[in-house]
Amino acid sequence: IVTFLLTTLITCRVLMMAAFPHTDSSEARYAEISRKMVETGDWLTPQFDYGVPFWAKPPLSMWMSALGMEFFGVNEFGSRIFIFVAAMVILVLVARVVRGESDATTGLLAACFLMGMPLFFYCSAAVMTDLALALGTTLSMVAFRISVREGSRFWGLLFFIGLAIGLLAKGPLALVITLPPVVGW
View 1 (spheres, rainbow, N blue to C red):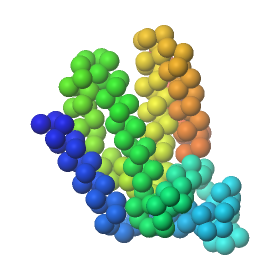
View 2: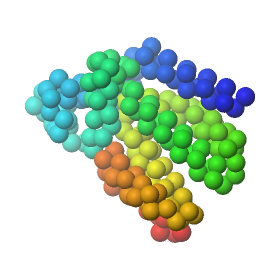
View 3: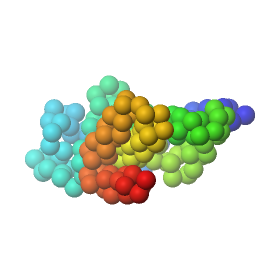
View 4: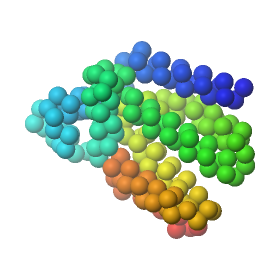
């Protein structure tokens, strides 16, 4: 039943990605910045308006949306698909780390609970910087835990990749979220 519930939640979110327009003003703004990246071919300078740089946020989430628009067209689905992929990676990471502490069923249940949380469900396909930050911090924390537990250099490397993702998503906030628990450990 847990697998059915998780599959239902994910399917609903995929259908909503294509069916609902950008409703939040931030989502519409980031989608437009991403659209301009695709239109102008300038992927280095996010533009709020033509010739007006947008330096308020690091560019990772805008790159993700622009890449989706490049592959799937300039539409709601295209702007949201790679944010959604990041959310699915987070679910896999959560299931993986919980499975290591308990069992596969509990890991799947943890992923199901996370996907069922209203804020995560909404952000799992919203054109905003939050999910990219969550991907970076989750990857760092999970990788640190597994690296310490299993002595894996691969997961140790993923810890730093997670930090890089977080920095490209929201800047130093990724360090503020990730490093205190690591230092405390």
